[in-house]
Image 1 (cartoon, rainbow, N blue to C red):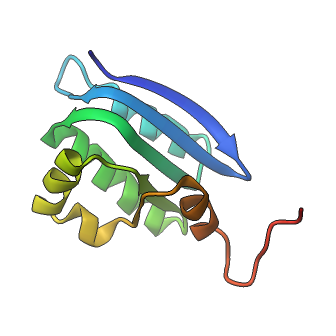
Image 2 (tube, rainbow, N blue to C red; image 1 turned 90 degrees about the vertical axis):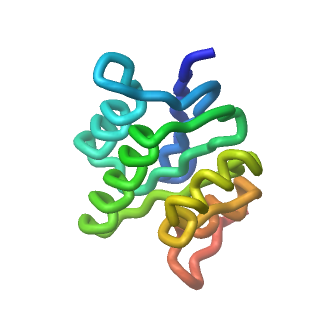
Length: 122
């Protein structure tokens, strides 16, 4: 299965639910332009949900790293949610997990974007 991307919002945070194989290349890169478009439209808080990702390649890892750097320079942030053990191993090898905060729980990930001392009103 190729890559499918669905986007949703939660309290100013853009969540990208990725499904399938995150594979790119000169003729098939879906992730990089999608991320770039979000950044160009002003998104500053991105959460990449990798729960349903089965495979990832170096092009896609590069797109994630570039987006992380771009957002960081602009005062924004990118975080990763629920990579499988296989995807986590790949991200660990390229040291992306040392750079990008990674979470196993969506509520915890979303809370991490809020400033310290900020609480959500019931």
